[in-house]
Amino acid sequence: MLGAWLGFANPVYRLPLLALLLPMGLFLAAARAPSARAAAKAGYWIGALAAGGNLYWTALPIHDYGNLAWGLALPVPMLMGLVLGLYTMALALMARLAARRFSPWLFGPFCAVAWASMEMARGAFLSGFPWLTLAAAFSPWPAAIQGAAFVGAYGLSGVLAGLAAWLVVPGPLSRPGLAALVLGAALFFLGNSRAGEPAPKDAAIHATIIQGNVDQSRKWDPAAQQETVEKYLDMATQAIKDAPTDLLVWPETSMPFYYQDGGPLAKHLADFAAAAKVPIIFGAPAYERTLGGHALFNRAYLLLPSGTESSYDKEHLVPFGEYVPFGEYLPFIHKLVEGVGDFKPGRSEAPLADGRLALGLLICYEAIFPELAQQRVEAGANILVNISNDSWFGDSAAPRQHLDLALLRAVEQGRAIIRGTNSGISAVIDPRGHIMAQGGLFTALSLPCPEVPIVSETTWFHRHYTLVTWAMPVLFLALCLACALLPDRPSGPAGRGKIH
Image (cartoon, rainbow, N blue to C red; front, side, top):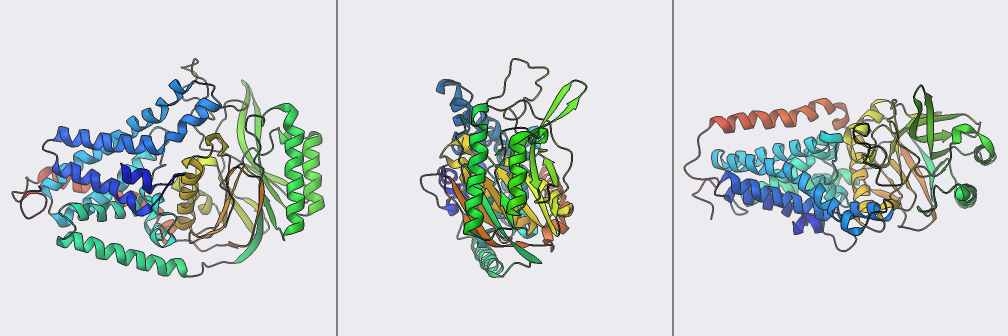
């Protein structure tokens, strides 16, 4: 648990390699457990406490913007941990059985596909929450995450977990343990070689991110709308003077009004784009009239100097933040943060285009879902744009963990990512996972980045996405079947007597 807290991004101290203590401890506890009940208990509390500790920041918006007392807000990360612990509990049960019936050589691959399958399940069930992906802990080291271009983030997490399993069952001085050390070093060496190679590119653009750092408590105040628009226009005007700019990127809901209605603020924005001759990506709420009233959307616009505009509506919404699950049946549950209403998911993944530039949009935490980035590139995106507003979470681990997950999307898809946020962490990431430019937290800034690559070439993972995605759970189920049919090994899981 300590390894998880210090291995994943946090504001205090971090060493990515320590994250491997999480799978190592989990598999060792499972293999040593005297009973299935003991393995389930160990797996559950290891996963629950590790997740709850890393997700402490979920209490902040509930208290600060949901107007709930700390006594009601603080249990939220604990409850999330208790739910996420169910996944590691199931994993521990299977790992215990595999340690008793498989040879040490087969135990490692079993743990690899089991861990990858667990992360896939966690990213799919109940709207999905693939936040604490093991591979994300290693995002600060580009050499360590290049495997995501071939097996994806879940597959890379599985590889890391499999190597961790060999190190503890049967042990680091056993043949599987030594093989894990050699393979780990080889993967890092090959990853370092790939990370050092220039990414293929068709062309490049000069992008500038405007991080407005608008006070979240005033953002939706109608009296502050004019002030917010003027702030972004003033910062953008200065940024264009300071650096060549082919594209301006503003954050999620940076414009706190209905741009589609027109009016003075919308005209002001269009006039600026025309005068500056620079396209702008910006976020704003939107709506669509329906028979029952209005459907609200979290929208990203691409406004061209010609006045032409295109848009993308966020399709994967945040439960309790942008909509209330089963809200029609549970009317007493309200959203936990401020906003303009319950949003509806968008219906199009097409990139926003300007000439040869095709921008695949990922709004807010859509960047944590591998399948969404896959869909954007499949639809023709040659640059990914992630606009977000992480100011809900203060100076916590959340913005840092969010950036780590975005880094994995860049490597998986071989695409540069322009990440524009309201309060940080804004960044530009190259297709190899290097940070080309990065801003700070809770400061207003313009972040220019020249030579952002436009890429049409796809990664092995992208081209074989279906095969990679289904191979892991299929292999896991096949090994589970074999495990169920095999008897216990007399020699124990270490292959050389019992584990002590």
